[in-house]
View 1 (cartoon, rainbow, N blue to C red):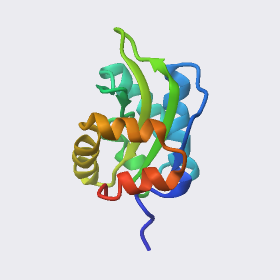
View 2: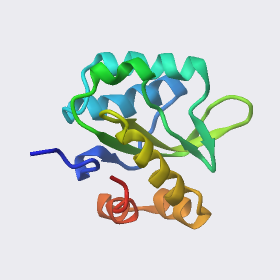
View 3: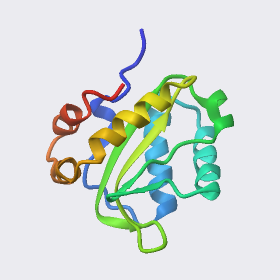
View 4: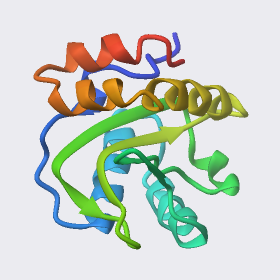
Length: 145
C-alpha cells in the first residue's frame, strides 16, 4: 500500500531553526524518517540549492533533490515545516514555510503545481503560518497528491 503523500507526521509547526542549511536538512530528514527517501536524498537537496535557490516568494521555500536524486526516492512524499521567525534565503528573501518534496517518476510535477496553487494565495500563507495543529495543514493541502 502506498504511503500518504502528506501525513500528520510530516508536518512540524513553529520549529526554531537557525539557518538555511539547517532548514533544508530538517525538511529532508522528515522525508528520510518517514521512509520516503534514503539519507542520500538530503545531499541532493543541497546540490539542488547550489544550482538555484528553492525560495519561491511569499515566504515559501520548496527544497527538493536534483533530477538524478530519483534513485534516492522510495515513495512520493512532502514535508511541511513552519519557522515563524523566518530564515534568510539571501537577497533579502525570508522563508517561513518549507515544503520538502520527493517524487517518484514525474509525480513531483503535479505536487508542485498543487502547492503553487495553495501557496499563491496570501490568505493560505497566513493560514499555514498561524496553524495550531497538523490537521489545519492537512486540510489546506488536501488537494496535494
